Image (cartoon, rainbow, N blue to C red):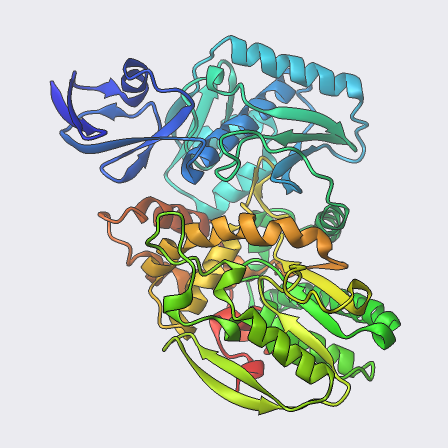
Length: 546
């Protein structure tokens, strides 16, 4: 018998008891994974040594939701393969925390086909089929992928060239989702599907939706942006990591891909500036909002120059300069942690007074916040008929500038939305790149360890759902700040930081997840990145920060 610790109790369990068996004995529901001695484990994991602590994880936990979502993608791919063996499908993240399942443009995906997939998924769930993990020699795995027509997986595996490859089998089907899965198909009964365009949308629980499937909300601007991103990648044939890695071979090819991505940014800036110029005579303020590490600061400076080329003068105000003293920052629900993401963490009266003074051409004193010392300095400013350009996570929140009529505001939402995949069944999580950007910037510019970035990230994400996402529909324009090459450039900066996370840390598994993700990317030379690139905001060396 083994002694294990669960929920402050000591349990005696037989050697090699699986986590799933223990979960069932404890009568736990909606659990998809567990942490064993601080390490994330699938429920098929068998207990074979004394365990200091077991924590079961469900829909309230991001790591468990990732396992559930990956398992759902496995289920959809399996159902589609059983019905339409010769038709490939592509998963991409979509608006309203959902996944879009699409098919090749030469395939007309009919409603009847959608109905058959729904029925097949329901049947597979009801059959409670085991999903079994196996480690195979590389050549054997490649042969299996060849038989299934998974050319994208073959390309990626050949580039990484491991001795062994992990596959998950269910009946005569197999696939790999680059992370753990649930033990069997019966777990996968919480999802919602609806027919959409040439495919369908799949919804599921999120860690921030109270363990419920959130209602789908139409987000036309975001859907348009995501579609444009996907079209751009299809046009340049850069939809998955193995295709991007082909450009790592020489400095010239790296530069070519970097150039393509930066041209895409410049095209968006040109389109945006043209829209603003048409309304400039009536505008008082341009607000730039977006979640953490979207590139708001550099974007604001580049937009300022772009507008100057149209003869439009602007003055930038960064909302980060308006943080209240620490003693006045509101607390989280626990009454201990500071809620730095709250709009109430900012000195809104001072901000509005500064805005009013600038718009009326009066001299005003603007605060300057130092993130390293967490202290303020001051600077006297006076403008003459400038449009005020405000950047910050709360910039498009209606509560921020209530005295300015909506018609006198132009609202911009900026966020990196990578429509990029490891392979066609495994899209990259949209928030991953923002965390990785922030980890580097925090370390280089804010004297903050990656461990502290991990510690703050949950609070940042909660704040985004509470304060930022509800206001994103206020936007007049959505700017996609993703750069198709950035994982390749960020990799050498991140590896040493991620390796600092010890096994004893609660963030060790997440660090290992990122290390594994980055292992699929081939490094690019950061010296080839354009000086004015948004990426320089995070890796340093931007000419906008002299």
